[in-house]
Amino acid sequence: MRPAGRIAICIAAVALAGAPSIPAAVTPKVVPRALVGCWARDAELPAGYPSGTWRVSIKRSGKLVAYNPAVTSCGTVQDFSGSVSITGRHLTVGPLPACPASGTYTWGLVGGSLTLEKVKDACAARVALLAGVWKRA
Image (cartoon, rainbow, N blue to C red):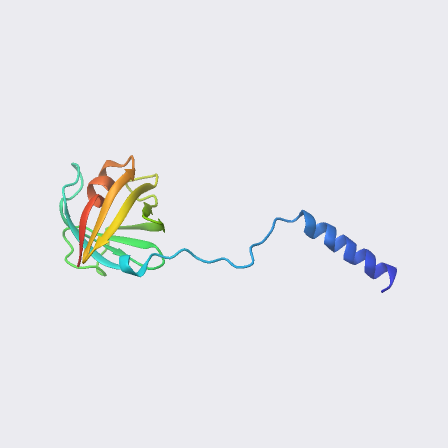
């Protein structure tokens, strides 16, 4: 190899040594299949929010879509959307229109029921909506 070629290789190696590392493969976090689908729950929400049977649709990608009590099925006119992520038995709901910070819940499945229990969430409206037992809709 000529000296000019060696210099170019050395410069490239020095430049790469200072660069941040790039992971070999990035695996997107996905929601367990058992949580994917449409869920319904009767919820008493704080004043200013409609109480009644709410529905949420959870996608494998982590997208959450909520349907207020005026809507009778998932996949129609949504009230709001957000995201969820799962780490073990913890479900974190990202910021929502009425809740600027995330909230964390434990989750459990028994038969066709999904139970969410608040771990940490400062948003009373989200806690009133999410914490409790959801049934497949």
